[in-house]
Length: 638
Image 1 (tube, helix red, strand yellow):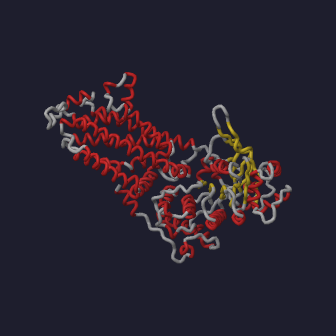
Image 2 (tube, helix red, strand yellow):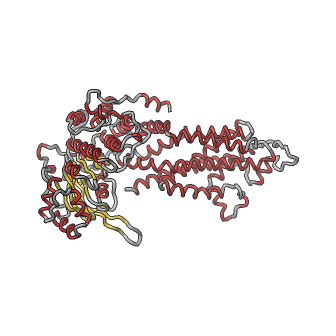
Image 3 (cartoon, rainbow, N blue to C red):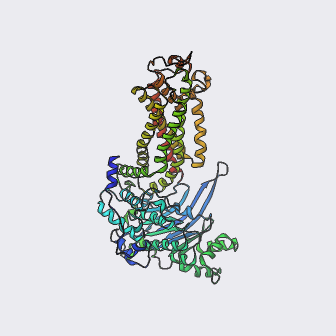
C-alpha cells in the first residue's frame, strides 16, 4: 500500500494552458485550428483504414425449438477512411449489431467478409488499432479526469514511453477535447457532454486508427451534440475512420457527417455521401419534401410509413449496399489496394502466423496500475470502505450489548452459541450482499476496458482480490475485537487468534460467493439469488438441527456449507483447547463443563485445523469458479 501511495504522489499535475483560448471556456471550438495542430504534434501520422464488408449476415438463437433468427440480411457496405460516418436507421434496424460486428465485439453467428484496405481483416490485428466507445459512459466515477487519463496512458502506451511524453500526450488530448479545465474534477461530477468527451479521450491516448461510437449523442442537448460531432469530424481528418450509430439527427447535425449508411430491418437502403442522399432519393422517384429534414424523411421511409414497397425499391436501387454510385469524394477502394496517391501500404492488417499480445504492457505493469487505481477508489469509496467500516463497528457494539458478558457464564452458553451463529450471519450477509450490489457495475466498465485492450482479465481479477484484503482485514479485526471483549470471551491470545482466523476466512468465502453471483446476475436478480442460496448454507450449518440429527440422505449438505465449518471453528476456539469449568452464578449450570456442550452440539474440539483447511479449499474453489464465470460472462456478451 505504501508503494501505491508513492505512485499516486509521483503523478505530474495536468493543467490547461493559460494562453490557450480553449482553456478559458473548457469547451471545444471547431474553428480553433490550433487545437487540431496541437494534437498532431504528439501523435504519429496515421495510415488510413478503409473498411468494407460483403454479404454480411448475422444470426442469433431464439430458443431450442424455434431455431435462429437472421438480423442482418447479406448487406454490403464501405466505411471510407478520413471520414465521419453515420450508421442510421429506426429502432431494431440492426445499427448496433452492425457496429458490434465491424468493431469485432461480436464474434459468433457471423457470415460474410470484412476487409481493411482490401485485405481480409485479421481480428486480433484490427483490435490493436481500433477503439470501441459504448453508448453509456463507463467511467471510473471516483477518479478525476487527470487520474483516469493517467491510468489509460499507463496501460495503453507501454513502459517504453517516458512519463514526460505521456504527460504531453494527455495534456494535448485534454486541450483538444475541451477538458483541460476539469482535470481535477471527478468523473461522476462531469456533465453529460464532458463524460462523452472523456470517454473519447481515454481511447485516444494510444492514437487508434479506427474509432467506433455507439450513439454518441444520446442524452445530450443540441449544442453539446454539435460540439461532440464537430470534435469527431476533426479526429476523422487526422487520418482516422470514425464510425457512429445515430438514431435521428437534426438537419444541421446530419450535414456534419461525411458519409451515411441507412439500415431498415437488417438491409441497406442507402450508403454514400451525406450530400448525395437527396439526389439519390430523387433518382428513385422518392423525392424529399421541401423544408423536410432529409434524415427524418429517410427514417420515415425505413420505418415503412410510406409503404413496404418503398423499402424494397431502395434496397433494389442500392443492391443492398453494393452500389458505390453515391460515394461523393471518397477515395476509391482500389486506390488502397494499389497504394495510389502516395499512400503507404498498411502492413498491420496482413494476417501473420505469430500474433503478438493484444495488450501494450506486461501483466505485472498492468497489475501495478490497477492496484494504484484500486487504492484511489478504495480510499474514496463511501460504500465499500467508509460505510463498511462504520457498519462493522456499529453492529459489533449492538451485538456486544445484546450478549454482554455471556462468554464465560455457564448458564448462558446457549446464548453465547446464538451469538456465534449471529456473527457468522453478519459476516456472510454483509460481505456477500455488498459484493453482489457493487460488482455488476464494475463488470460494465470491465467489458469496455478489456475489449479495448487495457489489461488482461487475470490481472483485473487479481487486482480486485488484492486491493480488498486490507479493508476486509481491518473491518473484520475491528468487529472481532469489539464483540470478543464486550461478550466477555476468555482473554487468551490463542483463542482470539483462532476466532479471528475463522472470521476472516468466512468473510473471504462469502465474498467469493458474492463474486460468483455478481459475475452471472445483474443487481436485481443477484439480490434475490444471494439470500436464496444462503438458506441451504444455514440449514446445514449445525445450528438448530445438530449435525448428528441430520437425516442420512442430507448429510452431504453439511460438507458443502462453509457456515458449518465456520460455526465448528468458532465453537472449537471458544470452548475447545481443554477449557476449564465455566463460572456459574446459578444453582445448577448444565454446561458448566464445556465438554458436555461440545457433545450435545455434536462438535469435536480437535476439528479446528480441519475446519480451517475446509474453508481454505472452499475459498480457492469459489475464487477460481468466480474467475471462470466472469470469463464466461465476457465471452457470452460477445
